[in-house]
Length: 150
Image (tube, rainbow, N blue to C red; front, side):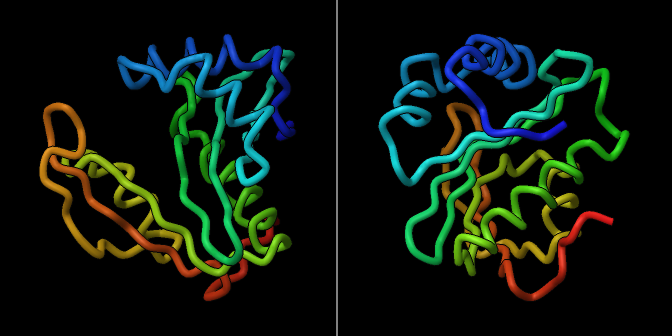
């Protein structure tokens, strides 16, 4: 089940970030995004009462910036990430979003391929965006495709 995050979810989101990314945006940042930022939304994927994935973004007018997106390792390659992404894209479209910008590690070929499958294109490289690596900036035109979950 995909639903909007609540404050009680933030500890588990932080734990998952540390597990998957070896770092986290941090509880305080996540709480600020969830509670105080009207442009920010966080969605979680819950299975059997356990959060196994999440996606957060900020949308201002017709533009959105993906903050973080992950699926816990034991649940990867099962279509859950695609399900979350399609769901959130529909939410964005309903809110008038036309363009998504995101950053991804240059070495993360799996993620790059995933975003390309949704029409994502690399538009530039940011040297040393991550502590140890360049980042690629990608753009996805939201209204170019129909992302309805079938």
